[in-house]
Image (cartoon, rainbow, N blue to C red):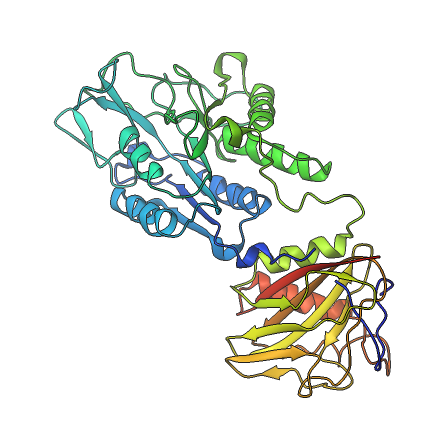
Length: 446
């Protein structure tokens, strides 16, 4: 590694510091209903919507442990309300980021409390929705959802609804065959129903909501996923691939263009953006780094954000000058094999800080704090040697992985992490085999 010098006497390190998003209290709740108790209502492609929105949530900075998914039979009315209460209302504080997404049928019922000018309430349809006495029961009414969202303390809450309320039969068209409008018609349904489910939000409220369609338009579901959600994913991927930020206003425009390009003119629906004006202008993507950040850095961030649980890693100073001594600590709650690596902005291979030549054994027992340097884990100094930013990563696995033993560099005190070892850690993430990870970023100034 070129940014930091490692020696045994007066040696190394590096590395503004902030904790990894994996340690934050951000929460995302993704709900999809494609299979209904009323089988005639089933929608195609909803499982793909959830997969696509999971990818979007990760791009927004939500880690694997911060995303909860409810699908089909789990997404009953009580299941949805309970998840909002337990996951979002109880789990989010004012500075945390939240995301609520739902892909399902929408419909309308008669307004029972007289608060709607059109005498009807818009509703989302959970799995257990039923038709009884010319109306729908077990629905999530717009007023009800609005009250639940108002209880969430987060001042950074994003809402996306992929549903609609009315429409007529349509034939398969354009790039996506088997399109189906996401409305649910039933005998006794109010006439002149709105075409979209558009949750109402105050201009200065705590959230901004992007809905799939305008009033009197119909959102479309396909076997490849709903057009609105596919458009969101397309816009997010485009922004990331071109290294640019993305806010809700631009997202609305990008999704509109995607829908227009992928259906016939008579079935185009335009997303509707409402709510907090300030939130609409904020970048929703994280890790919007300059092109200077290496692809290796991004791979490690992916590993951190998709770990099975967080590992707390800290450093004694977050901003340092050349010559400053540093000490970092890792709190190990779960026993396993600990590897701590470091990578600079342009590095192509991580440096293994622990284990090392002084302490080659990396099996750590539960409830242990690893302090480096220390008499127990290495009698050397860590000193900032060169300016720049670095990412420090702690990886804890149930399977034995020793990045020093398997590393490149012969008899070097600090070896380089081999490609094989990094692949083993990545595989542990993909199969969810009990990998924990955490990170800290530090910077050295002149």
